[in-house]
Image (cartoon, rainbow, N blue to C red):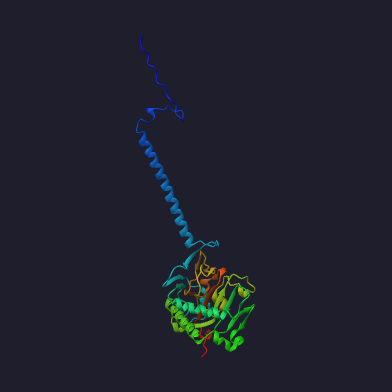
Length: 320
């Protein structure tokens, strides 16, 4: 009687397929390796894509976005040190309605920023002048001013003439050396504006109001404290043809908020204050602007502006 061979029973795998050599006979281990490599490649591609997206987002926020939600381009960041940066803008037609002064009336308009006009030590000395003078008074609201020319000093909800109010005591607060530094800084700013806008420096005249400002987050008590409204300097002050701001404290270090914002048709742009930084621009409607509300700390600056009309000129302050 012939011997019958019994078939070896097949074992069914977890997915219902038959287990055994037939399933993985053709390079089973190699297939596993290829699967692992493919998995790693897929994950690497995703990781690279995520990192690229994060980098792009951070770059976008650095240039255009801020925690306050307002989107704008940064003309000058606080952490930068700038020799000179100029941003041309078309001149407003408004200049045709004003008296023209050869060698001074703007033919080229724009805005500029530089950190090279005064030294850090000079900036700190200017800050000490502002702090000393404003320590004599100060607004009840968030904005205080000190005008060395007219003597105007914020006091509560009003202004006083500090030279008359304090008399000879002022000579212990503001020295002739302080005034000399102020004059030297003013002259250098005047020359920088003349170079940038191709002007005759002698055709530029210091004009009023020229003042130190101190801003903080206190609630406004009068309209004088509401420094954040958009405005045009030529409209607000009349005599201004060129406006400059010299910053005496650092954005994000000494205070939050308080950036200077140009309001343009397509997108706004900002200058972040930095100790010793000079920002200046033509004063017409091509440079509509505002100052952002200070959210914390104290912001110091000085506004020094110039006119083409000698009838609106003022002289430098001095004790002599």
